[in-house]
Amino acid sequence: MYPELFSIGNITIYSYGMMIALAIVVTVIFIYREAPKEDLIFDHILEAVIAAAFAGIIGARLQYVMLNWSYFSANPMEIIFAQFAGLSFFGGLFLGTFVLYLWSSWRKIGFLRITDLLAPYLALGYAFGRVGCFLNGCCYGQPSDLPWALPISMADDVLRHPVQLYAALGAIAIFIILKVLRSRRPFVGFITIALFALYGILRFTTEFFRFEAPVFLGLTFAQIFSLVLTLLSVITIIIISRSQRRISRSPGSKKGAKK
Image (tube, rainbow, N blue to C red):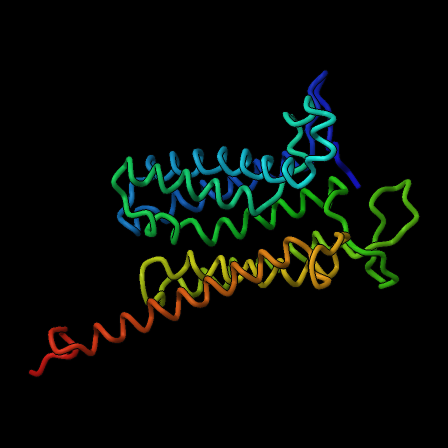
């Protein structure tokens, strides 16, 4: 597609890197408006976004390298990159979340308060990232004869599912769902867990259209991981919801106490 947007002298601006940068900028703009509503200091949240973003990029790269170790073991100098190419979302998600947890502990700010605030924008950032994949010509789909099928590049004559755009549209839908649920969350942390569940469903679905080799029972590694992630998320929501209902009905609670 268009992996290089433009060049200024010896500096080349790559489409994938530009989309990642836009995702961070958009997140910061929205957080600037929403942090005060949650009684959170914007400067603190900005620290969290920057720390999580850097950790996410490192984690995404590490997972990609591990999944393709047969190549990188023979080409170790290519492990370090400068074009935001070769990233895996799950690695970025978990290392970014872990660093965010460490940061929230250091700042003594509720971890789940922060993640509930950031969760919708992580989904939106994922959409930007998948558009970057589309422009970069990576993470491409299976061959297809559908009217909207596209080649990976101008030199490629094989038409494929634009699975990156499927994922981007799905992520935008998740963003909207989480924003709607934000004011109706039954407990702190619900939006975060809902993000994991919805992303698992989205990734499991889009993998059917993606050009990836199955590893078990016809499923790819990402599909197996997505199934586990979604199941654990749904189970967690059910357990916490039932626990809260039991507490609300107990004799000592305000709702359960007799007037």
